[in-house]
Image (cartoon, rainbow, N blue to C red):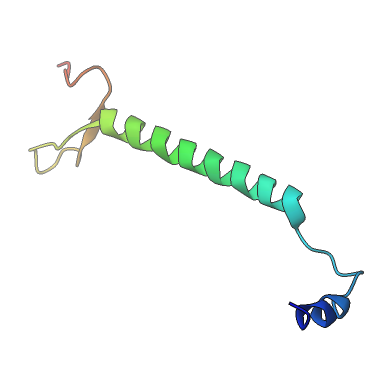
Length: 71
């Protein structure tokens, strides 16, 4: 333990470190990204992609009303 005390004295007191505030900001950002990814996965699961069988038609369309396509 006594050999660590000189290493602490060599630490530059003018050096800026993130500290507790930096950790809290990083943790809040990580939780926000996690929540956004969870929400995105839930919304992407609700998308119903229907591929068109016509060779000259659209390649696909997104149906948002429960999979019922009018027409």
